Amino acid sequence: MNTDQARAAVAAALASVAPEADLSTLDPTARFREELDLDSMDFLHLVQALRDLTGIEIPEAAYRQVDTLDELLGYLESAQV
Image (cartoon, rainbow, N blue to C red):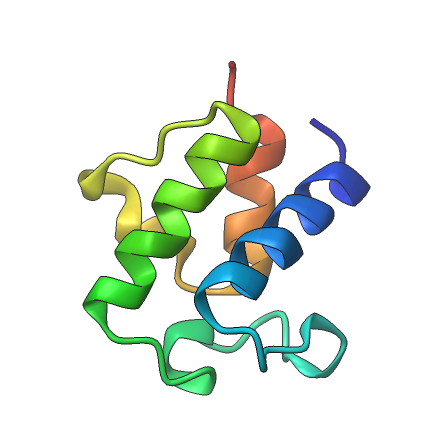
C-alpha cells in the first residue's frame, strides 16, 4: 500500500467514525486520538473500519505504535496483506 492509498483509507475510516475530522488540518505528528477527541470506542471503530477497507489487521498490541497520523500511515504502508 502506498502513501496515497493509506491516506485515502484513513480519511474514509475517519469519515465513518468522526465525520467532522479533516485530515488536511491534522498535525501528522500529534496524537490524533487527542486532537480529534476520539475515545477508546471511536478508536476501535476506526481500526475496524481500516481493516474492512484495507484488509490490514492492527492488533491491540500495536495500538501504541499508531498514535499519530504519520505512525498510522507508516503502519499501513508497511503492513503485509
